[in-house]
Image (cartoon, rainbow, N blue to C red):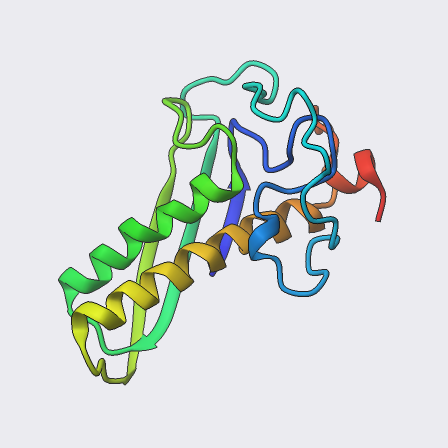
Length: 157
């Protein structure tokens, strides 16, 4: 997965440095903090950056697999990969977000059982996307005139 994250919602839980995508983290790829315990009282509070406006926010991504996929299967893969957005960003898919996932397949590995394999590929793709979103937020660096601090500016390394 490759993703550019500029969502209205946030990837962190409440006012903590813990990521919504924590259950999918591999090693310490985005800080290794897991879920806060206990969850903060504001965990489910609707928090978003400043004043969202139409056309100003998006999370755009590509998901790739080495499987052989038909056009319809690639479309389904893109659709289920959006679940990774919802696992990593709260709230996600707002009216101010222009969320989009492109799917591609190299066609190197044939599917054994299309229905079962697509379930597995979709589940892995969604968790991979959640991880990619958290990694992007965790690794972000500030640009001149940014109005929102990066994760590292707020929570350290």
